[in-house]
Length: 114
Length: 113
Image (tube, rainbow over the protein chains, first blue to last red):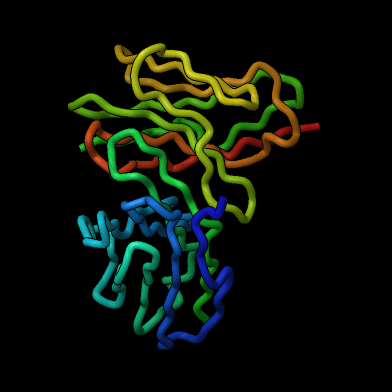
């Protein structure tokens, strides 16, 4: 069974560059979530989609962050321009869209902005 | 809005000793409750969940949690820990009919030899 697939696993880039993180959810899941994890703030929900439509983006920190889900099998999280404080581990998770369904997480993208 | 409080950020315990990781939640409506585990350099994995029915739920690797509605708690316990249980544990809550899950800040479990 393929789980949630994220790429790249690691990204190191310089401040000001555009960063694109990618996620392939589990086939058949219709909810997709993007999280950011840091030591200071823990796990934060950035945005989530249901049937490819953004439902709640209140966690997106700034206009520099954007997320898209062009189809049921692919989503991107983009940061432009990137800043050192964006350094974190970014997780994508997917689930079936009904109450009580657990979320399945990818292994994350470790992002370092120099 | 619901919230989750994990009272301990770190818990050290000797191997083969029992452990309890505490979790309290707040919500004005009925909820589902979860415990997730995160091993180093991995994503979170579901450990166990409470949806309805029996208030005691168990995982396949010896953990159990009990839903206590009056105390709004969902503490995680294991009678005898193993070195392989070293990980971070997250308590989480979601309101019924809501896809969103709210996570606590996590508790790091350190197993001492």
